[in-house]
Length: 325
Image (cartoon, rainbow, N blue to C red; front, side, top):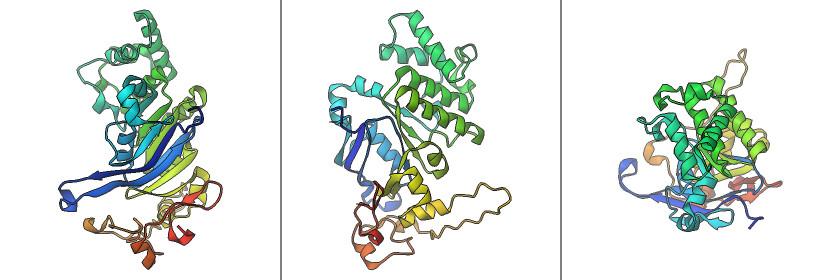
C-alpha cells in the first residue's frame, strides 16, 4: 500500500463516561475526527486549546486508547490490526515524544541502561560494541557528550538534556512517524527552536514524519507544513500552515490567531480575543457547532446543525456555516 497515507483518521470518536464536572454524563472527547498525513515525510500540527482532544487523539494513534467509533490507519492498515499482528514492528515505526520524558524514565536506572534496552528490544545491533557505537553516535548527533551523559541518572539531567535524550532514542530507532505531544512547552524559550530544528532535520535527513501536538500557534508555524485545528473534540479547520496563520477562516481559528502577542517590544500588546468566559457546564454544546456559545457570528442554524468540513480551495477546509458547511 505504497500510495496509502502514512496516517489516516476516519470519523474517529472517543467517549468518556463517569463523574467530574459533567455530572456523570458521557461526553465526546473526540467527535468524528477525520484527517490524514501523506506518505511523504511531513510535519502536521494538531492545534487547539486545552480540552480540545489533542492528547486523546495522540493516545489512540499510539494504541494506548481504543476509539469508540471510526478507525485509525497507519500505512493503510488499521492500528488495531498492527497491534494484534505485528506489535513490535508498529512500536518501532511509531514513536512518542512526551512533554517531559522524566516521567517515563525509571529513576533507578542510569541513562546507559535506558538506551541499551532500546537497542536490545528492537534488535538494532548484533554485538555490545556495535550497540555502544550506535548509542554514542546518536548522542553526539544531538550534541550530547556521551562522557557527560552516560553513567548519570535521569534526574541529573536538565529538562533540555532529557528532551534531547528522547530525540537520541528516536534517532536510534528511526521510526516513520513520531507523535510529539507538547514537546517544547516545558523547555526554556531559548531551547525551543533548537528542539524544533531537530524535528525538521529528522524529516529532511531521515524521512521521519511528525504529528506535532500543541496549543501554541507560534511553534506550530515555525515547524509545521500543515495544520488541523481542533475545538472541543471537533475539527474546525485544515490547511497549510501559511493559510491557517495568514488567512484563518473559522471564527475560532481567527480568535486564537488574534490572541498571539506581537513580537515587538515597542508595541504594547492587548489581547484582542473576543472569547467570553463560560461556566464549566456550558463548555460542551450537545449539538450544533462546538464554538456556538462563544462565536460572535453564531446563527440559529449553528445551534442546531453540526457544520461539515468543506473545501474552499487548495485543500483549505473549514467546518462553518458561514462557508456553506
